[in-house]
Image (cartoon, rainbow, N blue to C red; front, top):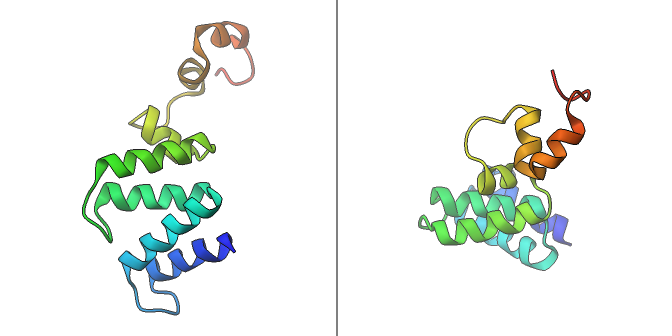
Length: 113
């Protein structure tokens, strides 16, 4: 059922088979996020609140949804919450995600250029 709710959100967002309606899209993304914790629907709701699409811009709500999506492993949400800017080099990611001890253990590993 929650996959259907997320699908309805996309349908209303893009106007696929229904009239485009951002407010309804946000409603279905949020409903899916609450019902199932779907990380993609949660991320979509965060973007809409951040950008003021289908609702007024609300950074507090956006941050709440971004945090929830990030906690479920949605990479773009992790980037929104923890790192703004271009996707970092893998060695930088190690430092961001695991600290210096992880970096030392992986020094010279295949992920290093």
